[in-house]
Amino acid sequence: MKRIAKKPPSMASRSGSTRGVGRVAAVAAACAFVVVLWGGYDRNWSWTGFKPDAKLWDWLHVFVLPLALVSGPLWVRHRDRLDRRHRLALLLLTACFWILVAAGYALNLAWTGFPGNELWDWLELLLLPLAIALVPVWMEVAGGLRPRHIAVAVLGVSFLIVAIVGGYGDHWHWTGFRGNTLFDWIQLVIAPLLLPFVLVPVVEATMTPTTVVGDAGS
Image 1 (spheres, rainbow, N blue to C red):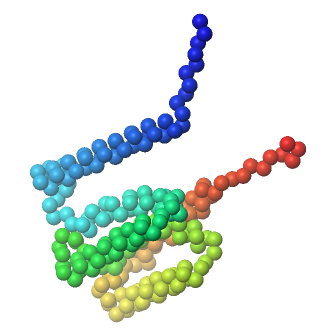
Image 2 (cartoon, one colour):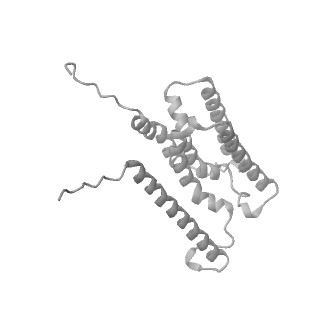
């Protein structure tokens, strides 16, 4: 009797199955997280560690870095496919966040946890995630500086110099710089500075297709 060989599953079917499992796992994880939140805040499940007085600032410390780690590679891979609507949506989200920050300080919104945090605290929160999210910019800069890159760099460095001089020299309290030593600054900037010089070249080399040159006689 002649045996009929079974065909292996196609790559497309395996990919679709993997995506389906990934979606189910994501939905299950989201549901579990919502249940844990409900139990921690509403039912006082002490083992969750979720306290009723937890502020938005505390949750930013939890989610900002993971979001940057996830969005960075996606931005590198799909940034050319973003149309005007996507870019406008990102711009509106960013604007809404900073409007909320301004309102938190101006109106003393306690639930945000923003009042009382100084520039140093924001740098600790956002500097590394921002460096990760700007990986495409570092890759673009590696191809050559453009006037807009120079303008943004000059503006940022100038602001930082003024804040450092005012924070240490004139005791500008809002900077939160006074009392931080050189070691504190090294801890703050070491990872964001290493990122464009170490991680970005690795990512760029991985994404660059390599061409195999055959033998001359072939």
